Each structure stands twice: as C-alpha cells, then as structure tokens.
Length: 305
Image 1 (cartoon, rainbow, N blue to C red):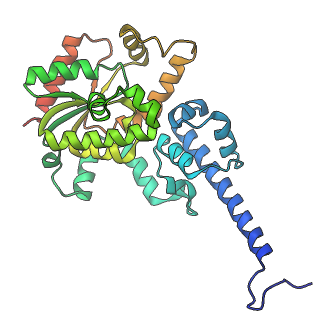
Image 2: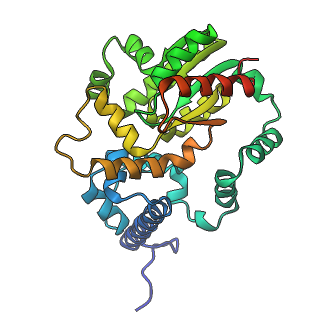
C-alpha cells in the first residue's frame, strides 16, 4: 500500500506527528550526549553540577541518558554551570568539532600575553579606557577578597565596595533573603544591575564579588571589560579553614564530602578564574604579606595609573 497523503501530496497529520516525535527524541539524545561530554571535559561530578545548576542529580542522569524532557529554563541553568552557550547543546552542528569551540579552548590555555594580543585584535577599543581605575577581586569564598580589598582600598586611598552589600542596599534585604524570595535567577539580575551601577558611579575603586559570578557569562564579560580583574586564590583546605574561622560552619555541617565538593568546584571554575588579568595566591601567607603583594601587583600592572 502506498504512502497516504492529502490532495496536495503532503504527509498526513499522523505521519507529521510521528516525524515530530522522532525529531524531538533525536534532539533529547543529542542534548544529553553534549551535556555529559561537556561535564566530563571539565571534570565535574554530576552531584557538583547539580549543586551549581540547581537541577537534581536524578534529572541530570535522565537528561544525559536522553530521557529527560528538560525545560528551556532548566537547560539554561545547566549551560551556565558548564560555561557553555545553550545553543551549543541543541544545534545540529557538532560543537566539539567547530572552529569556534577550538578557538575558545586554545584561548583558555593561552598565556595572559597571548590573550591580551588576541583581545586587542578582536576588540580594538582600548581596554584601559573601559576599565578606568577600577580593580575587581574574584575567587572562591575564603580567599581573602573582602579583607584584602578593604585594606588595599584604605592604603591606596580609593573606595572599596562589596558587591553583595550593594545588592542588599538595592533589594532592601540580606542576600540570603534575596535568594529565598527571588531565587538564583533573580539574584543574578540584581547582581548585573549592581555592577552597572558601580561602573556608572566609580572611576576608581576596588570591588569584591561573590565566587559564583564567573558562571554567569554576560555578567562576567561585563566585569572583565570594565575592571582590572585579580583572581585571589588559595589552597582548598585554606579556603575551608578560613570560612570556618569566620564562624560559618555550614560548609561542613552534615556534609562529610564538603572538602571534595569544594575541590571539584574549584577545578571546574579554574578556567573561568584564569581569565582574570592577574593572580594573587594567598596560600600560607599572612594578611600583611598578601596585602603588600596585592598593592605591588596593582602598582606594577598600572591598574590605577
């Protein structure tokens, strides 16, 4: 029996529906494979990706198996956590063989000098003019951003601002209440708005931001273009010990794998933190030593010149 068509020779509704179902199934398999491959390339355990994206481990397992009928909103969260554009996960073109992804990988492992030359070629507008005399400290909690930022600002005679305090003033409530009321997406919007406001009101300053800001591509791009960024880093154990010394026992409370999760998060974010213009390692150093090194770095790189 021949193919059933309508009087125009088009496929019948049942056949069109079957084709649509097959297309959707193929899409889900493709998305699942790419999420799994992206996660494995970055060495991120599924439970850590779950924490970073807010998507449950069970849902992620279904997604990677091609069985998860994930919403666009949740897929966007996964893409952000993996530092990928969402279109890379759904396009018919294989992103792993694309020239753009290869260039991105080469850029990530390139030296600071090579990155600077590439950006000068791609973006002729003087970076120094856009960044003015603004310095931003990035990195995981416990690295010493707030302590060193406040001390350096005082020593150099320029304002110091913590972005979370700016967000709290804007929202009229503590950050934890912002997250509870508006969720991660709402917090990220306030975060981007706060950076825009800080840039508009300060030509010279030191800013300290939350460690997860690097996972928001557009916001991080704005940060990199408008500030001289310094990655303040430390060994994972020092990160944890400093947080505990501040009186916050939540990271270890009922979580025997807290240290391993911290290490995994640090490893997954390293390629993002390494996009900063400079690095300051505070491991095993006193506050005074780290402060002197930060001030010397700022002066040597002429961030305030």
